[in-house]
Length: 439
Ligand code: FCB
Image (cartoon, rainbow, N blue to C red; front, side):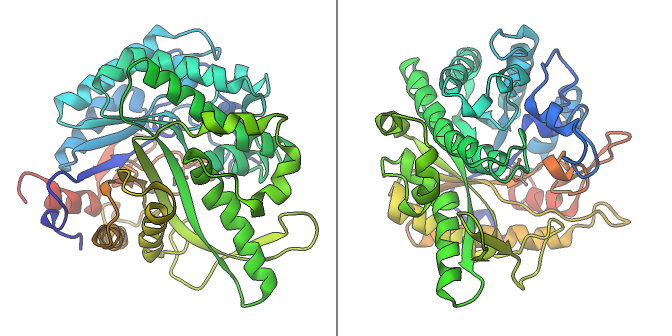
């Protein structure tokens, strides 16, 4: 069961989130290749060998999808613009792309949906990947040019803008663990990316503000890191993981130094002169986006820093194998407000559950329970003083789940990838009962 609308303050925003590469279809509309297209074209990187070339064909079906948002009763839609679509060669604008996003934003406003834009949800133009991508310091300037271009066209109608989605994934998951594009496993590449993502965020947000943009934020992901046993080694592994994942970015954007437990391994590989960037990185924020899904247990691994091996705990799991632990959301919201952002407005910008489709694709009652439990966890944080202003479910549609391809289904709406038919699930109807006209 979902809570009641009246359990939340009247202005509290409910929405759903998507990302360009996961739904649009990168083959359409004159988009250039992104590093995700090339990563996905390399054997072994994506479980089912699939890419986002067609995805959910949202590029053509966007009106249907916005209708689904409106009809569920949502007041806001979190979407992303694709850098490789807007700048196919990484630098020159593609007018067709800007026209597409222009219509999309107007379509949201016509349906009473506040547009929450994310400028980078992982589709780096391949031409910029060729120049080193996030390893190259110039990425801060490239990203700023792109951000200003998008804002010049859409900014007058956006309710909120996030620079980056999940810098931990952009930098660490993609350059150290090698799971996402560009698929590197290299401490030096990863360390540079860990800094350059933040430099890009700071540089772009200052430029956007100078251009007159308001309500600027960033979306960070957080994952509970706990020791797998009560040994001192496991405690140290969990602490290192927490520093890299949960502290590195939020500390930097709020003007705190990089955490020592992460600097132990990353520090020696940071680009020269990084200290001089830290003021720029801590550009003023109007809001913070929090993505939260799960927890992992951590223990010692022999060999090189960070000497960390993760494992799953005993809690019930989603289709991704991710433990379900709603109280982690409460804990992070309280911790972030207490240690980092005070009463800055915070949004849950992603939280959701992957669940395999059964014979009746609309039957997703475990997802309804998952959402209800996480909404109550969010409400519990508000009761303890957190200035939480909204909650976006991930995701509106079943879509391309990156290295896991089309297997995982996170959507409130089922997508048949052959016919592209959209079928609302029980969770969509539950939101509609909670938020919609008949509530
Ligand atoms: C987040 C991503 C999003 C989606 C969910 C399941 O890390 O931001 O694109 O893949 O996980």
